[in-house]
Image 1 (tube, chains in turn purple, blue):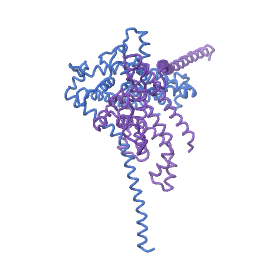
Image 2 (cartoon, rainbow over the protein chains, first blue to last red):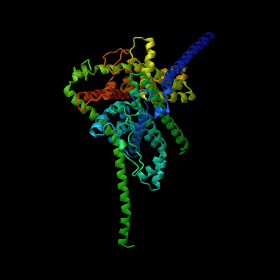
Image 3 (spheres, rainbow over the protein chains, first blue to last red):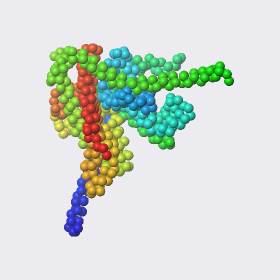
Image 4 (cartoon, rainbow over the protein chains, first blue to last red):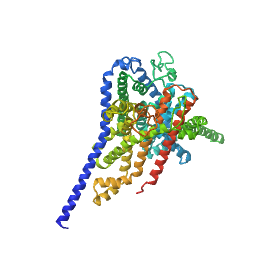
Length: 307
Length: 309
């Protein structure tokens, strides 16, 4: 091979390596677009809303006067709706996942259920709103209540709960099941005493991820016709006198954080925009807190498990 | 032990076993019911959408619905043409995809082929955070931050417009596209890359000519996921793109999408059973059919281009 040829090959390699670097730079830049937008969003929200955030804002009802308005009914509503969503979605989702992983035979019914779970995860959230409007609000006569909203969001996050629960059940090695059977456990005893406790970390992570999605959902709750101006709190679920628990809050009208924020965003007065930004900060903090809890749980449970 | 005693002890053994069997069967049935609730949800969604739409199409012909160029169901001179709403959905989705597909794909290639592990561990959660921000916050951002920013470059841009809604929606769906595409590319066997390097290809050539084509089925699934997110997105467009139906392909104008129309009607107080109430179910059915077609297309695309190693 002559020296000239070698030179040419070296040049060619150098030129190609330049392209490599150029692409690496473009790649970094394109990821930066997303991250810079995220930063811009948070900075914009904070610069607009942080001055408005105060104890008074958290403990006041909405009002027609922007400087007196607050998010008390919104965050209480969100908490109660999330509580109901969790109560409805956890048992249903976990039970469905157990059936699909431990019981289902390979037949058309199991296939049908699986296809449905995947499809439901792709249905736009506003369609769940229409389902809730037709089914919960009118057919079952629940009206525009916490009950209707909680059940709607539970259906919405059901696929998330099922998929994550299935993954964590599948991660349990079969020797555990065989050991339980060998000691005379029935199938359900095996599931209740072994499969469920060992997969609890994954289940909790999935539930929290689902709830953090539900907490920001606006469209389905608007669709069921939730009122946006609520200046009272639902009846308290815990009472001082016997029987200490009351269920009348379930049928109470309500508002939630994203609805309250949407209400203020669409108002023409600029003072209300400031309120919207402040509500947005609280909403993002709620989602962030839930997501970090999910990451922490995943980390902790993964560390403790040694098969 | 005589016969009688034997029989007695047998009976004692049978009863607990029977109880246990019955209990096991009952539990299995309950679990089955829970799993079947997913099928019931789908059936109920379709039933509600179709039954309300049937009532709607008894009053308005399907041909009119698909060809009329005006959507004014709440006016006295009512027109029921889905085209203006569909064009709004189409334009915002296109703008979003013009942002999300290039950025998402390049990010995915970078993360899977170029980035070292430490960078990936840091950047991926940051990108995924983008998908975790509530959409109503994105709507606020598009209206209060992005639109004024764009107005500095295009002074004639109106306060609500499809451009800023589409741009923000595009940023929002980057993580859906990038993370699914990245998974697909990382699933490509390392031997293919090694073969390519052995032939003297650079990283970039390997990424674009070997890994990307090998992962195309997963990547197209990621695009489909992104498209159906954009089509079904509600709050960003309802806040930033306006609620006026407008048959146009110009992203600088305000226009309502199918989802924004459903929100607009729900904000009002339409009586149950009126034709205005039925329109949102007809609009919802259109939306479901669009996402269904997309999902089926995605299914066949990924089957058609699946590479078997």
